[in-house]
Amino acid sequence: MIAALRQKILPHPLLSGVLLVLWLLLTNSLTLAQGLLAVLLAGWLPVLLSEFLAPLPTIKKPLLLLRFFLLVLWDIAVANVQVAVLVLKPNRLLQPAFIELPLAARDDFVIAVLMSVITLTPGTLAVGLSDDGEHLTIHALHTDDPALLIMQLKQRYEQPLLEIFAC
Image (cartoon, rainbow, N blue to C red; front, side, top):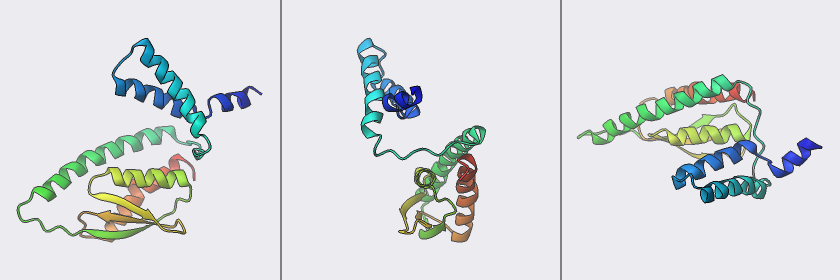
């Protein structure tokens, strides 16, 4: 009974918490009015949007999630430098490519996170998902070896996500 009531009032507690903190950070204010508005938005938006939000898969390995998050931050920093070097070279010879990444993941949330990570990393962009959900089309700004890029993406990002969410 209490769980059902909590589900109606606060269907996505993690999302509510993130919204509350983000609102306060974005407004850069800890006044009573901003605090109340943050609580109102953090409570109301997830209820309003609950029909559109997919259920999150269970996190089976939270420490691996933390490690994955740090790895992604590191990869973003390194890729920024690599892209800057590629773009600023006076006689740059870029080898852009569209590649098809075969997916082992079948969970929509895991695929969305994978696409986001690939897109957030400079030099790569997740362009689309095949109709059958088995391949991800990725644009790489520069790659000498598309097969190596596919292997790296699967090992660095997809495999840990499958372990984290036990899919």
